[in-house]
Length: 167
View (cartoon, rainbow, N blue to C red):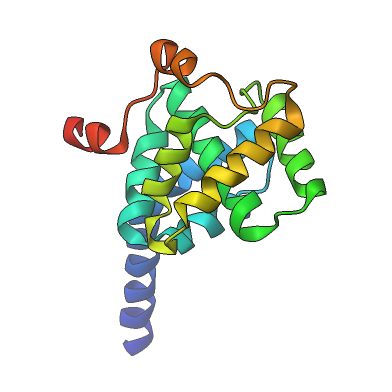
């Protein structure tokens, strides 16, 4: 009789856990599938973001908005290149991954600010992120960083605080 109660408890726990984490797992899998990466890369970033930021991130990329998915990919790129491995080879690898997925492989100023918001628990240095953006973009384009006014007028990005107000 005790075994039946324990088995029932385990089944309820497993099913409850699956239901509670379904949204974040689905969002992580969607991004991983688009980038053709194992989900562990996205999930490891989510685990280090902190609970609140990870929920915001998964809610953000869960929508069917292609721009949000690209921005999520850029947050992953920034995390991988800044936190995990800042080598030239890793930068080239991520540039290739983003290009193959059909995303722009250059980091915009708005995407950098979005990454600062999502990665806030890791307390990234904003100057270090700006330097990363300059170096990364300069590696893969003749112009380096796009003209500041040029990206602002045609951008589909919204600030993290504006997105929070809407949701």
